[in-house]
Length: 203
Image (tube, rainbow, N blue to C red):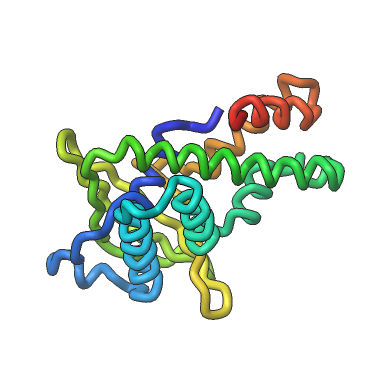
């Protein structure tokens, strides 16, 4: 259900530390706050998972904290559900948000296990709308060409949060919104079909 390539690439940010910004790209950093936010989040994640004294439950709990520290999970989950969010009952909304979080945590945790030496480098930032910044990066792999990833960061008050990730120009949020809508529509417009699929995925 979840687009695996998008999620695994998104997880690379939380699985690796960043490289210093190359001098050639320094002039491209227009929002240092957003760039520093992405850089700090990556470093905190790798420091956590580099600790061998942490049991898996502890590491997952810390990862969940980092997830909420870095991503606006409630916003993302509701935006991805689209028009069906308002059509869902409060009970369905509550279960959906819980399942969505579990799915992300499980997928990202598995990514850590599969980690094979990727790093990322920040190449610039650009303003998107009134309150968002796209932090442009490259995921550098031990083998194969680098992957272009844009992190859409929203600043609210003094805090930054990631609200979307685009990989090679493909939005994770838009892709998931389309996939979730397809599952719901194939079940006659009933969100219970999506909830069932999510339960099976996280079980």
